[in-house]
Every structure is written in C-alpha cells, then in structure tokens.
Image (cartoon, rainbow, N blue to C red; front, side, top):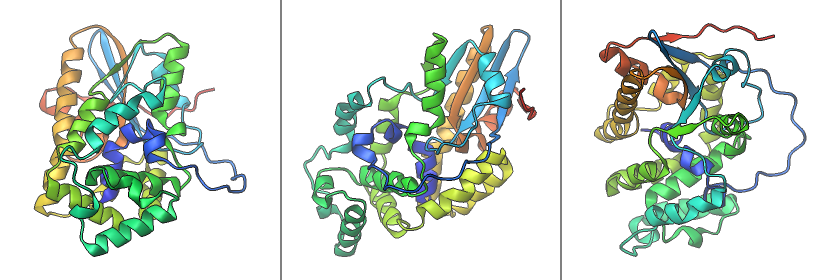
Length: 310
C-alpha cells in the first residue's frame, strides 16, 4: 500500500499532535481564494433515525466546504461522531503518542534500517528542518507517518483547517454531544501493532515517495472537493498493488475498521435521533466501504443530493 493511503487512513491522530508531526509551513505569498468544495454526504434512514455519513480529508487547506448539504445535514443533527474526539489541548496527546511511538525494547531506528535508508531518512528530515537524531528512538511507523504529514504540508494542507477541527468547534458552539468510533489510543495501537517488516516497508516507501506526496495528494483532494467518490476510489486503487503486504495493510486500515463502523451504525439505528458521522473519505469509497458493509447488514446509504444553500 502506498503511503498516501496510509496517510488518508491514519492521519487523524497526527493532525492533533503538531509538536510531533507537523513543522511550521514555509512563508509564502497570500494564495488566491480557493474554490468552494462540495464533498459527498450520505444518509442512512429508518422511521425515527437518520445517520449522515460525511467523508473528511483530515488535512485540509482553507477552501470553503462547511456549507450547502454538509451544513444542512450537520445542523439537523443532534450528535457528532468522529473516529476520535479531538482534545482541547493537543499537547495532552503527546504522552499517549510517546507510549506507542517509542520502541519499547530501546532499539534505535537507525539500527533497523540499512545504510541507504538511513541516509535517505537523514536527508528527508533535514530538508524538513527536523534533526534526524530526534527520531532515532521512534518506531518505523511513526517516522513514516511523520514524513507523510510533512509532505502533505507542502501542498499547503494541515490539521488546523481539517473538517474534524471545524466540526468540533461547531458542535461545541451548539453544546452538541461529540462521540467517537475508536479513539486515539485504539488508532495508535493499530499503527503500532503493524508487524516489524510492514513498518519498515512503509518507511522505505515513504522515503522513496517523499518528493511525490504533495503531487499524489492533489488529485485526491480535487476528487474529494468535487464529491467525485468514484474518482477518489480509483485514485486509491492506483496506490495499491496485489502484494501480500498491501492486502494485509488494506485489511488492517480499511476493511476491518469499515466493518466495525457499519456494526456501530446498525446498532445506533435502533435508537431514535439524527447523528452526523464524520470519518476519513477513504472509508466511504471503494468495494469494501462503510456503505458496502452496511448493505451486507440490509442497510442502505443514499447519497444526499447537492443543493446550494441560500
């Protein structure tokens, strides 16, 4: 699995921990106004319950998107549910991240890489303004995700403008309950639980693609902005091959989690109310999407038509 898919599936915890995964973006001239985005929304309904499904791009720029049918669905909801609840103080996540990101056996990252990989990692971190030695006590998965998030920043996107941040603020302004499907610790356990060989392979891939991340993310962001789910799914498929490692990682990051979330939605449908569920857009695209898992439970997710709100 290419690093872009890993980033799309697991970047939420990183967007909430800027001290670990994000560096200040370089100064740049003021950009031109960004066009309005129209990301996709679905609804699952029965007689007394509506669950809206909104696919987010965890790392985003300042383009307007929280309007039209997205805002209408959110405003009609009684509860916000995300993959994980964002902490009021992002620094509070750092001890939790350290618990999983630091190698428990005390091994150095450099000892787990070959000479070429160490040299490439040193170049990549130095170019990002990060001292390479600062990462030597971390697990390979953490270094790989850090490089991916730093690469995304070169596209001018970050967690500060991400939908989860915007939705959290809007829910708090309404005193709206905020729930989570997983929580940050479960997501960290998922990343840290990847086999050693898979972690090193992902880091090696991140190093190979370090200069390509922004270019690969750009068309995915464009597809998300246009609500073009088929195009997004096709781009995600392009980032995978049929290797055993790709199949293993896809099942870990997407298939299993999507099935778990579909079961949560099925159980929640038994209670009345309107819920706005926001998860990464990659989970709502492709043949093993949340919608496909819901269909296996006899639940239909219907695309909400695009309507420009006044």
